[in-house]
Image 1 (tube, helix red, strand yellow):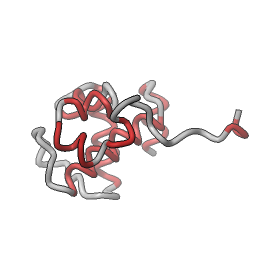
Image 2 (cartoon, helix red, strand yellow; image 1 turned 90 degrees about the vertical axis):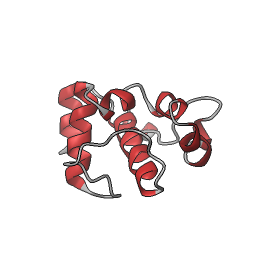
Image 3 (cartoon, helix red, strand yellow; image 1 turned 180 degrees about the vertical axis):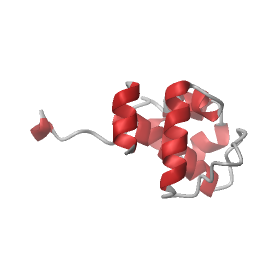
Image 4 (cartoon, one colour; image 1 turned 120 degrees about the vertical axis):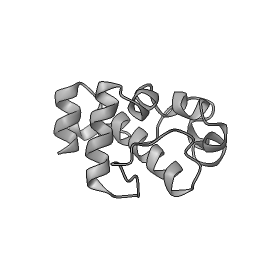
Length: 104
């Protein structure tokens, strides 16, 4: 379902998944500095939160607006999260997930 929402909203599924995972990881580690709507429980694996936050990213609403620019930009707005969670994207801003070349 999140895949379909991303496709319909014009959001790359890998980038979308990366920013949602980043927000959930910050939340789980207690270092998310942004206001989170009470209706969204960002515990890891909560599919309802994934759907709700994906929709907010596409619409650039609240936390979704911060995440819409990607993990590197969101991490720059949260120094502690960048140091602890986002080490792979520190220099380049790239994400590790890559689509399979066989799928091309």
